[in-house]
Image 1: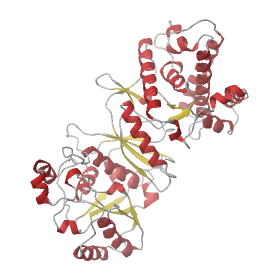
Image 2 (image 1 turned 180 degrees about the vertical axis):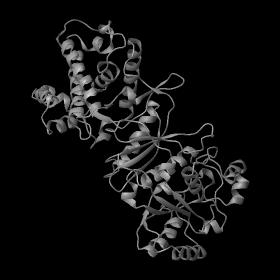
Image 3 (image 1 turned 90 degrees about the horizontal axis):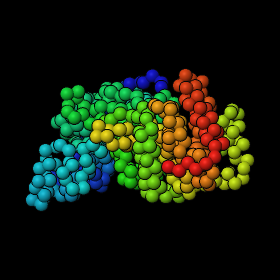
Image 4 (image 1 turned 180 degrees about the horizontal axis):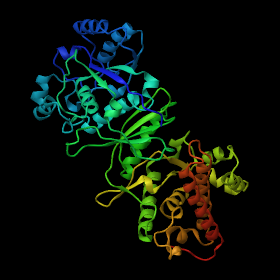
Length: 485
């Protein structure tokens, strides 16, 4: 990854709005404009911005009161205002639109929560504290994280709201997110290198889209809420992010995977996603037979729920199995490409490979599977969903649970899941063998071809695993007899 360039972020609250003057709770409502006094105050503030401040981007929430405040700075600096929902005020649920007097009368307990200026989890319809903080982290990552200085400048200005400002400033200064901070209409905070302050820790291999664990909070806080921040190339382009949010919500609801808490598009077409970090241990590459069967059962249940939750038609434009094959076939020639080309010459097999009837998790992998402290298996990465034929999900599950990895006890090879399920002459077993072979060939192709991957020590090691699995699959393909589970 390129050397990180620190960013200075100036952040302030919007000027006085009409609802502020009426002592009315605004929350995430976007409409109340500034008062005349607020507009005048915003103008005075903007006029005081230094010519040599070096501000390159002016950010604002999409609420009128924030945009109007930021617009004054934009006019002063000759810059457009970039609006984002990430900077919106916390949603106040049933309290939104009420005066403080009415809120105290109608919802006294909820109003006390609001006045306490902590998390709003107890208020019906309000935004939970972890989602508010996840939005803060998404904004800090998008604007000041890897590549942020190149996209938006080394000095940036953001106009936001009281509760969100509190969460943002505390998150960037390693304090509990509800710690009191100055949130008056004229209060400005300077955050120096917020990305480094999040203490990012890279979680995955360098050839995958960068995923970091961040720990926004003091070391002595117990428990510290941690998050996983991922930077995904291309996800923010051409409306993909909206579809991604909808699909991710359906999948996490159906499968119990950590939900998407926040997401943000960047101007280079990439996107930032934020989920809560799930404590536990990823699975080792060498497992016993019983663990392999348990893992296969988990993967198959996961894919069954996934296929029921998401219709394949929702994945128009998402790479299918056939698309992945076409990309490989259009690239440089190698052993994987030659075998894929031979397979696709079979017209009947080609029709199977290019089906888009079911959605599956293409990259079921032990590195992306956690066993929690309570012993539960959980899938932690949902960015490889793929339309394909009906049995592709089972094929991917077999690869991820068993076929690709050496067994912890090698003596009972025929008791391993892939050996039991892929042998025999039934139509089911033959189709599974074909799909497993294609999945393995695409994995081998990746480690032989992908930019930044091919030729590295890690790629050679992984390519050897795929070759060994393909050799064993060829032997299984030649065996006869029933291999029912």
